[in-house]
Length: 62
Ligand SMILES: [Cu+2]
Image (tube, rainbow, N blue to C red):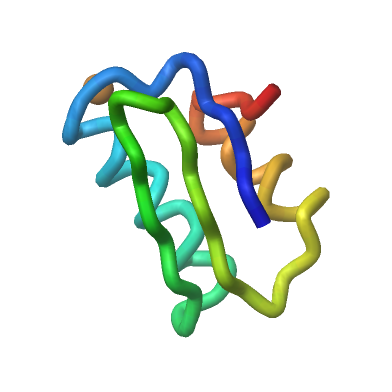
């Protein structure tokens, strides 16, 4: 699944997003494309759950 996260602007944001996803699913794979503000996630969680967690962390996907 792929998310656009416009508020993600630096390595710190990328780290928070990665940790947020891994708290939901420790086995998740997270790939961050910072210039494109794109987050690619491979997880067993459903997209709504991941999107809600990112929103709670301060990085709402659009
Ligand atoms: Cu940042």
